[in-house]
Length: 594
Image 1 (cartoon, rainbow, N blue to C red):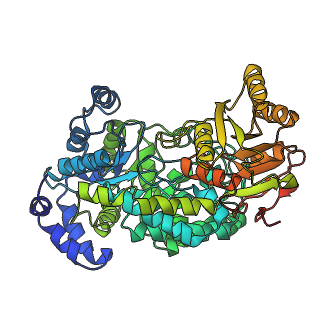
Image 2 (cartoon, helix red, strand yellow):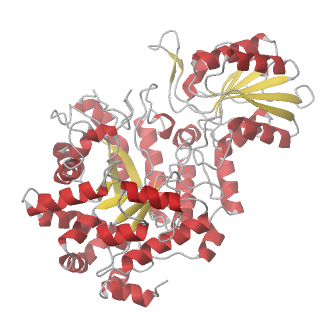
Image 3 (cartoon, rainbow, N blue to C red):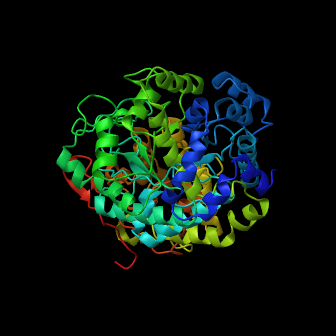
């Protein structure tokens, strides 16, 4: 690994002065000097944040080499950096970037080394989506926290800030300096297929406070936070990964609802804001997605909200941004709209060359590129990447997944579990009368790829608490035979715990048949809390908001009476038979004291 001296030399001595001078804007003269020495190809590269397959920057597995050759035309991360001079790289579990903390640290160091050894080499901004809850890229043994809606149920800004601080410390220790979190969308649509429990809730003011707290935590730990998805993705019934959602809010409603958390994030000094691939006619009636909208990104975000930080697109591989224009036009139009970072285009070669041709042909000016590169380099300077591009194994060991961090996550989770129904005070269960438990329900793939399955986690946690619990996974769409098997197994249990996941007709049949056995049934909504409206006969219902271990263990402690249910709904639950009426309002939640 190059020494600090080599790194400084690689950036022509500029890094040393950047590291020691005051605010980012005070460094602008030095940063502009760096930019003035860059070739056009290097400038285009700085604008991209790209995926790459493999656990190593130089020696990935053969399958990852093959995937890189197919999708990017290079073998390794180091080759991609040498060819395209990318300014950022995003880590994904499915790209095999995140096996374990020490491997991730080595990958980060390899990426920095590959970039800094280039002529006029610059440090790379490594990013990921570590929202916690249902979206995680770095799994155990890193500390995993409850997701946003669970934090919303806890209602504690202190907990949100603690989450950001600890998660930020751990990300920084493994070389990730930009996190695409928190979600600042206000989830007012229960049918939202893409945001849902990734949002803190449906009340703009509550969401705004938790967003600002999490931002303070992350950025205090030296990691850039990213508020997403501007101008607000909380009222969609279409997933922008696969379609092109349209938001029908008026400009007045946007001001009162969607804009509030983003204003709060900007006041908190947010380092980056991610765009949404949504159509928002009240803000721009052109039919373009917000990612490509000059009125939304430059007119509103830059002009009206006064934001001068980094604007990053959501993934350019998503259908919502590809519906109207080709992959060669999207990056150019995004830059013309006011974007700084172009995230994960389907083809880096197509996108990179499109930017070059747009400058060479006069559609984009080099000065426009310089404007975005200055923001990106300001952020890199603020994150001390010029001074400290590398991480150490000692830092990983001291920081990632420590007992203190894991205990903090457990304590926070205990404050989020929400008790919605408790007829006859069935909960908490008594080991003397309900010692033998059957745990059934959905077993969705773990968000991080390292935890679960939910039925097994719940059964193990309840067994540790003194019960005898048996897991019987039944899936999200149990067949008649599976339902019959669960009903038969219930005959031998004192009580049944069932996990519901975005309730389906088959899940509903399963739960109703279990209730009909006469055995006490405790349902746990392991994703959306709205499930409870579909099952009015269940005597006890908890909302856990996600199926990660930390939330399931907290739910088990509540079931066993080892923890009190303290969560309160951060979203309303409408009646199933009349969605215009509210069954459980925001703030609802039972306790064991009443």
